[in-house]
Length: 245
Image (cartoon, rainbow, N blue to C red; front, side):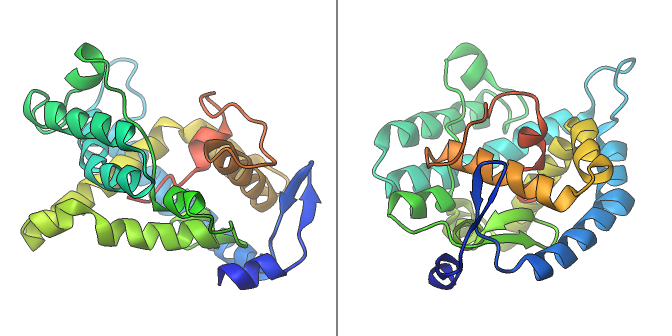
């Protein structure tokens, strides 16, 4: 699939190379995702998180987001090791250990607050990039949203290599998966205004989401064709896998 995607002729969008030979199919999936977000995911995320928290303070979803992020750390440790990067693997390991114990299963973040151990984000898509696998064609996946052929493979492998799936009882593993999915729903609510602006107010939301994803992802992987601040509170932060565990 990656080789087939690389064989097509890319085009330029706002100075960014875009390889999208499956645009017709991708736009159909995008229309489905957009309707699903508008009618189900967005409202459910807002309801679960208590999006209007100006009076009530942080909602219970904040704790779910923290727990979901904590449960993702063992997989990040595995990926860092596969990339030959022991330092972020060690930091994520100790972050997981501290937050799971002192942080009551990850509800709180003493590792970042007291020990200077912020999360070192990575995934198997980045592992493939480190191994030299090309990006491939752009894809929009049902529910999961924007991706590439390389990152789509990475999402599947991330589920397969997650150490918690092998260590926990199947019921506990599914509960872990559910918490991570709920955490992403919380992220959707947190960036709700920006996501709504991109999906509902853009003249061509498909092209906008595609551009933001490719720019942000290439910046993360230090690949060519990306000039964007990944830490800014922009659409780039909001549309990258807002639903995927």
